[in-house]
Length: 253
Figure 1: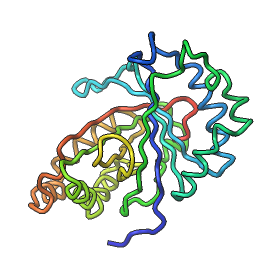
Figure 2 (figure 1 turned 90 degrees about the vertical axis):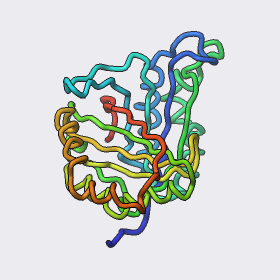
Figure 3 (figure 1 turned 90 degrees about the horizontal axis):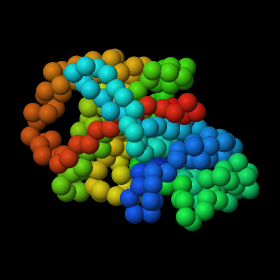
Figure 4 (figure 1 turned 120 degrees about the horizontal axis):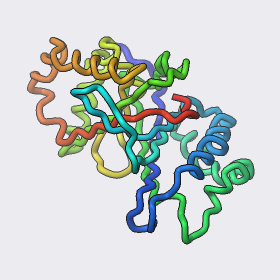
């Protein structure tokens, strides 16, 4: 199998707004939304960073094929960088930019008594060989309003097994998802952040019905049955966490 070179890096941020230790009450989303849309995204675009995804979580009823917003949803931000140096340079200088400070003032200059978030979690991922750069689905490019994403992280009980699971994707699982129309935008190996070792990826569709139907095709597929039954891939995942996401109105993905 041939792989393209020039793997990207992804920063994934999770802005948690539900009250816990820092907050006495849940934080309002409006200041964060304004900061992300009016300050962060323009600053990233100016620095050549594009296809930034900004999402909130939804609760999905798979049997009914329906969903509803999550009341205390965090805000997830996926930022692709062409190189590790780009990540280090751009992320370090963003909030020092006077334009960002001016456009995002309501968020950046909040009072100590009323923080804009409970906390921000951040992870850094390296793109897989089998998908070295983000693949933006056509329905994201055309901003289909019903598009939906599913983000999964697979934890492993050992660092070698985490590499084994990544190799399983590189040797067939990534392409199978492409073939079944599951429109994966990215696959990433976690190299920094909480809950290591793990990998994370997304699948997506123009609407929830299509997304759920595509996943139903995955399990019975003969190629998956062959891979999942191969002893060399045994016991490489200890925990699978799935989250359903919808993009904000200003998301680029």
